[in-house]
Image (cartoon, rainbow, N blue to C red; front, side):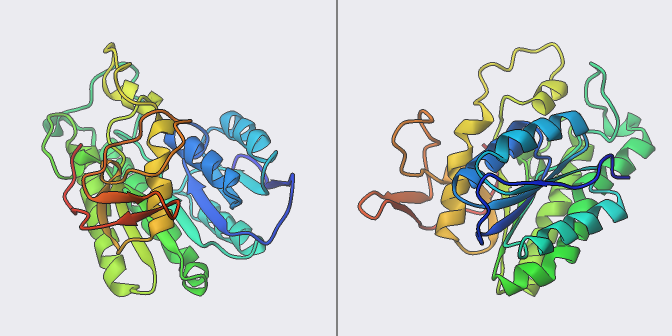
Length: 283
C-alpha cells in the first residue's frame, strides 16, 4: 500500500525523457537517479522508506522534475500509480528495476539463510520483490516504452550465475529475472532489455549480507554509475552484461572507472563504443 500521495516538484520542467527507477532512496538506485537527473531525465522514483525517499525527492527536484511515490513493487495499486505518474510526464523511456530484497525479511544481523533452513514466507517474498514485481511493473509500462523505443534495465548479480552458500534464494531470484529479461528481449525486439550485474558495492544491503564484516574495500555505488550511463548512451543489443564490461570516458571526477573488458572508449567523439560484450556474469 502506498505510504504517501504523489508529490511532483520541479526546478526546471522540460519535455525531456522519463525514467522510472525503483529502490531509488539510497545506494545505487539513488546514485543512478542523481546521474539521470543531471543528464536531463525526468524521474518517477520509488522505494519503501518514505523518509529516505522524501529526502531523495527534495535533492533531485533541484535539477529535474520528479515524482516520488513510497511503496512496494509487490503492491498492485502502487505499480499502477507509478505507471500513471510516468504517463503524466510524457511516458517512460527507461525502466530501472533496482529494488531488491536479500531474504524477504529483516536479517537483523543474522547471516543469509541456507536453503535447507530458508523460511518459506521469506523465500516467497524474495521472488515477489525480485522477480514478480519487476515483471509486473514492466507489463504496465510496456505501452509507454514501446512508443519511445525505450529500455528496461534489470539489476542482476553474480549470484545469479555462481553458487555461493547462503545466496540460494537471492541468487535464484536474480537468475529468474535474468531469464525473464532474455525472453522479454526476444518478444520485444524494438526495445533494449538489459540484465546488468553491477558487481560488489559498498551499500547498506551488501553490509546486511555480511554482518560484522568490514566491506570498506568495496567500491561506492557512485563509481559504478558511469558504466550504466555508458550502457544507456551506447545502447548495445539486449543481453546480460557486467558493469565492469564498460569503461566510459571520464574527466576523473568520479575516480577510476571500471576497467572495460568488452567496451572501448571513443574519446574523439566523447562517447562510448561497445564491442563484443560478453554475456556471462561475475565480477
